[in-house]
Length: 351
Image 1 (cartoon, rainbow, N blue to C red):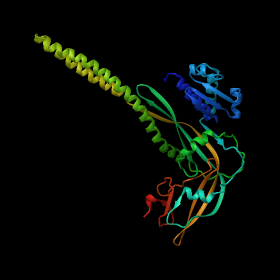
Image 2: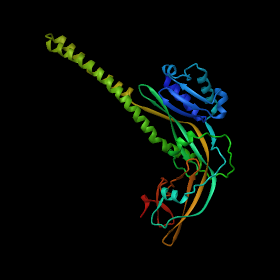
Image 3: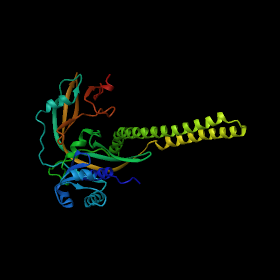
Image 4: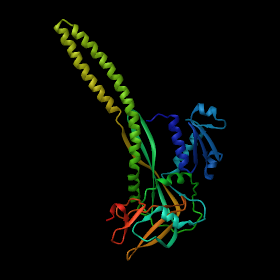
């Protein structure tokens, strides 16, 4: 079992609060400023919290609450995490639906339609789109253990990985019910979105594991150096005794000790290498569905005698157009070109 440390308490409490819709800022080591959503105020008896996770930090921060095992605030965070569930829905606040005024400029800044005349807007409609936040718990094992929550936000309509939305969604003061009345955009099967999230989180796991491996590698090398110094000194002492021994029986005994010491050193070195090898375990911890109104914009453009169409999505939370996905490879792209078969594809597939 992982030991309870101030760092692990801090990670747990802040993650539980953020997941419940709180806004968290970190002004310094072991200190967090928390703005609670209205529904959490009764549980913590106030709207704003100043949390300290280190005793000295708490002493130096007037008005802070020291969070440690046994404290009432930690007990509240545990109850919150237990009751919150593994699937939650969040709705963007506000009933206003404002499409961008400079739409043509945003389109030209988002996508280049190569070998085509400038695109024209042929229609638009507003619908509620769901962005799924998949939150994975990554546990790394070696000489010790560490855990980190890794996230991937996937556009439910297109299946695009949207890392740029992680911060806006965390900062959004969400509602339990919508304040607007909109139809819902078509959503892809959840299993497909989950697979997209798994692919998106793989590089994060590799990066996290590489960072942990570097820490473990430094500890491994330090222990190997210390072990090498011990065995080298032991072998040198045995070699000195062997060179000065006149009795064959004694020489044979010392030679056996040297061979046994070398074999023991090899086993010890292998044990050290094995102990510091990093193993990763990743599992889905929870899923959040973020309901965000989006404007769907249908464009038409002329290529020679052919009229092509493309639909773009304007996110009303980020106030940005999202780059489209290439229908051939499924990757987001900012350059589309006619493929000669009635479709627009990324330049990887242009002829």
